[in-house]
Amino acid sequence: MSAETLAFYEQLKKHSCRSDHGAATHDLLLKLVKESVHSVARMEKIDLVSRVNGKTYFALSKNGRRSRAINHALFSEDADRVVEQLTLILQNDRSSMTADDITSSVYSAAIAFCACIDILKDNDQKTPGTFFEYLCAAIMRAVLDVPPQTSLSVLNLGLETSLPTDLIFDLGAEKPKFHVPVKTSTRERVIQVWAHQRVLDGVYGTGRFLGLPLVLAETKTDSKSNEVTEICLPKQWRLYQMHIAQMWRIAYLDMPAAYAPLSMVFPPVPVVSLGSLLTSFGDLTQIVEKHREPPLMIPIPSPTTVVT
Image 1 (cartoon, helix red, strand yellow):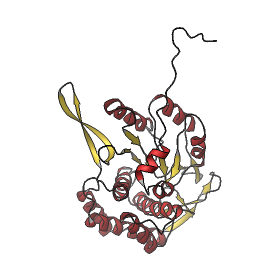
Image 2 (cartoon, rainbow, N blue to C red):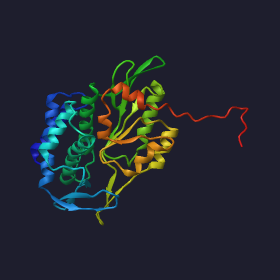
Image 3 (cartoon, one colour):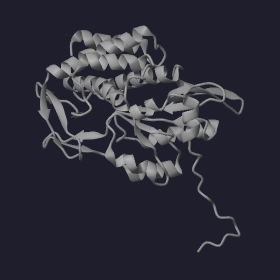
Image 4 (tube, rainbow, N blue to C red):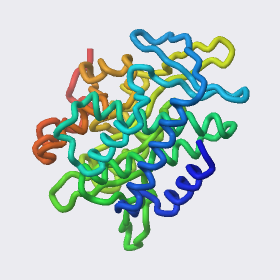
């Protein structure tokens, strides 16, 4: 990754995908993605020891530094194809793409930049996370056709204030409103995702905002053994879903197998690939109403109920 590419990133930060989603922002995103994928293709690679069933991973290596794990099957080194498909997604023209195409192209775009930053900077988690948020914001802006917000007005006891939030997409009166946390990984402080949803439910009413976290991956690489594992917390997620708030969908790029069954048990936590999610957004209102589950209500025994 060249100094020029980092300059593109600084320009992208100034445009900020949270508020500016025009052609200039898309152009900067695509330039960053193309250069990042090219850089991955040129760099030395090390095959990692995968402890994840059905998946193989590699890492970039340069000057004694190694990148995060990259999924062999999901990553494409064809920068032109990745840019072409990402361009279609940003134009909201996904008709020629399969769910796997969408997932692979967005994964390649995201992981390439993140891995390059791993090589360039020590322990820099902020830059990859910020880029991933910009990328997801631009994609969801194109899909939902509304700009995201990062704060909401709150009128409480006559005092008007604002509530900082993750990305919020408000489709308008009597239409869905989406709460979209964006994470490169949920391993740390994932409970905050459910806590923020609970705050929105408390202020605006349960079901007013649909929780839709977008996540890159849950891989962790041991620096000594080069072993890759997925750190997943399915039991905790079920507890959060039951007792804190409900996520409408959780969408992954590198989807952990441990989370796939969560939609089949109580309480359901629907976990899908990003490609599957986006291919379902044809008629948005119909899809939301078809798949929206009612809030989970835990029955409280009445005083006359005999508990045995």
